[in-house]
Length: 283
Image (tube, rainbow, N blue to C red; front, side):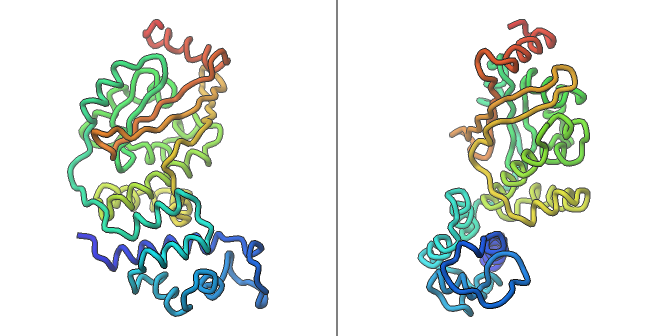
């Protein structure tokens, strides 16, 4: 059971990260001396949000549960975007406690078998790679056995592969963009499932094994929507430019169905067609 105190602490950490990232130059108020840390001061944010400094300080410290109206005032003062606002409210609520092992939904298994003309994969709540089709395997990680997502040891985790597997990392021409994206999705999932043992174990492992992950995790990125363009450096096909679509199926909204499309008539589309023939899909 995740306590109210734990939720408040998580929310306070998130607000500190956004206060630290706020550009002081956007404030229409006088400056009070040289700033020793990035972002704006608690006093400035409290003034903008219309609350006392002591009360806002207690919110950041996790000592109080802020009301919805106060949170909205803070979000407005910090100029949070839609994703950050949603994350703030997720953190302020209890969320869903889930302990069941992650398993690919039957309907998504059928989707993976049906779609062959574009790479498709499914991620679970801890960013576990629950399944992929042949083309996704060939595009992103053909050095691994195709059956890897269905292995019982649970080692097929996309966040783990992205940070700790050099061959997977090397597939992405803009690895830093992909890394922030997956950490943002993991942060969002943690807010939906506070205290989830699989998420907590993964975060502990990657925080120890990868300083890059630790730095990103501390920045509290948030991601729900599709990333957009994904630039790949495939060892055999060369450069690929794909556009991702991220869907949450109604049957299990903890699982992400991710499709990667090439622009019609593009060189990337031609390369995917070549790759389909190579892996025996013959389309």
